[in-house]
Image (cartoon, rainbow, N blue to C red; front, side, top):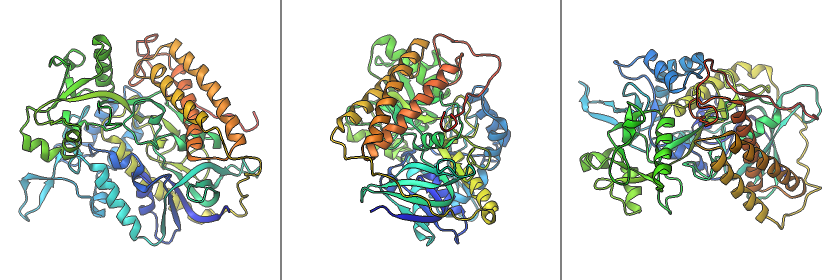
Length: 538
């Protein structure tokens, strides 16, 4: 039997952004944090590189801002970039205060016997400004924040909860636009429960699972973006999907990302014959921004007809490699690759969704009471290409900003009352789940083939035709059968895919991560691609 729950704040997503917001809010608030699988299933846990921030005396806010603007190919919103960078030091200090075990630099000691934190450099950065915990920064941050959340008596951490849709006043035919909560599938009971809340936060991550090859975990299905769109929120710049240049190429490796920090510490990209090639594409070679590196690898693979290229750090001392990159070393060793002696086979894979739900500097969306933070959101920070390690920083800065905004509005918002129960009276159990599996596979394959690293008008038109047919099939299935995690994710993924295709078709130029053979040049004026949802009933 379905249940009704009431909280002050409902956080959908249990990664860096969601946990940071929950921990930043006052302890007298009742907060629910939902994870659609196990708590550690999100992208945060798997982030390797680190967090970009201005921490060194030789670095400056202006330098970090300039690097970000350059990487964003003229499309970053400078006020968003400066806001994020100016709050970077305090965000990192907050993480240190929580107990995150960032790697210290044993080469620089202080009179009190302490050590400075080790900072590394990644593509697009002009300084060493990436603070990290070896090569498993995401895991270190997530574990620390989760431990802190478990100590809070006001934070409920709920696993196996899949948000189905947001509840808004408009959907209930009430006066107003406010978000009142969400319908949530409890995978343990199989029931869809009703969660009412004064404030709802979407922290569900990105949508890289829309592609056949991705570095992301299975849950990166664009859930928050799709739910926000259906609730009446604008979305922005969804044509910019970052492909990480170096994911491990091995049939059993699935989606293991080989951190960019290897290239920051001198790893070289090579062809199968051992020849370097990045210097032919960019003077920064291996340290060029990710879009350039990914296109270069894609070009060489297609030119030579090879399945992968190679990332080689074996010229560095073995102890250095094992100390700085223990996760990569051990993972590759599991597949018989000793990176201290031989190069790593790598391919590009979908990695990060630069666009998302349009928000302001407080993470607030177009719908009152609804916030989007982290990869779900479009803040304007990343522009046409996210610079390495800015994404985790965005999570912390905007989560803390959203929390401050919620605190300011607490006295003006009362708890929603009498929300209707989810109606499952007209649906039956599905006996054709093969349709879900088939549509899922077809969607990811044509997105990879037609809306990938290199695009054309014809490819996008084919993708648009296919996704509309799929959306019709999925809508019919959704209307007649009980919801499941697979169906909810497929519905959301298809919706976000359609928004990505529409965004790509609107951009008549090549800029940053969006590269099309039909419009290879960059237009003189940079404009965001903003899509507005239809008014209900249209």
